[in-house]
Every structure is written in C-alpha cells, then in structure tokens.
Image (cartoon, one colour):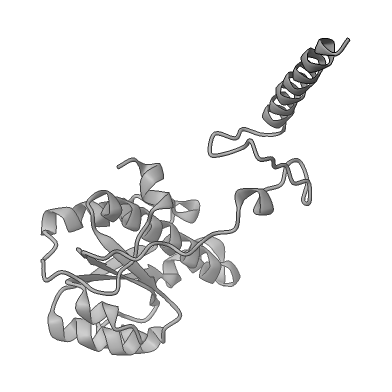
Length: 214
C-alpha cells in the first residue's frame, strides 16, 4: 500500500479483533509520530502508550469513547507546553502544540494503515482528568488519544468535499474544475490544454459530417 492509498483510504473501527499489536510494529508507528514536523524544531511531543486493560477502560470513560477500551493499544499524545512557550511565547504555544500533535497523529495513522491496522483519533476531552489518571506533570498537556487495532470490519472515512469545491488557483474563489480532471490534475494549464484538444476534436468531427452533405 502506498502512502497515497493509506491517506485516501484511512480507516477507523467499531469492533476489534482480539489480537495484540506487536511492540515492534508499535515502535514503528511511534517513530513515525516522533519524526513529525515540529514548529521551530521545539520537539514538544511525548507519548504515553496504554496497553493495560484497566487503564484503557478508565481512559475510555474519561474521553467518552468506548473504542478505547476495546483496542489493544492506545497512545496518549501530550505536548510540553512550557517548553513550547519558552520558544514561541505563551500566546502561540497552544496553537503550535496542537499543530505538532496533529502532524504526529496523521503520521502514526498512515504508518498503522500500511501495517493493516485501523485507528481512531479522539480529542476534545478533559485534559486535566487524563493528566491526573496517568501522572502527567504540570506543564505537559494530553491533547489527543489514538487507539489502534486489527479489525475485520474497518470503517471507511466519511465522504469529503470534492477537490474542485475547496481548491482555488492564484486567488480565493478562482475555482478550476472540469469533468476531465482527476488525481493527476496539475492546474489551470492542463485544463486549458484538455479543453483545447476536446474542442478541436469536436469541431473536426462536426466538419467531417458536414462534408458528407456538401
């Protein structure tokens, strides 16, 4: 599976197989997260890997998502807010920490998909409750939780807006789209070339038919 395939077919899950994810594979997934871009190379990101059943159940209740209890491995991604603040200032630290965590989550999910592992990303929970549960010190904030599992019934990603409805060229509002574009679409010039060829072909076809009646 290519990275592109993993990205467009990224799957979640509702039910898990009772199969442990090998530590070697989880190490690969975690390394992908560690290698994610970091604003200013601050590297504020840290991980807590949760495999214990009781701890997963407690975390599941705290983030209000039952899939966490079912998955054999869950990772809490936390950011060192104090470290980020020292580099970018308090006002920007929250946004930059969330950006670093989001990049790491996507890296991890893509690598997991390449290993036939489904995942779910959970956010919007009470970070203080989770920090207390896992002895996370002050200044470091749990921002995301990602659960990983093998499943026989992966849940596909929800339908996305079409590229032509969200992509603009040169300035906002300048949409470029046609029935001819696709994943290989490269921009305005390509569309013009395609239209030019199609139009010429249509004109030639019409002229050939007209000659039959002349």
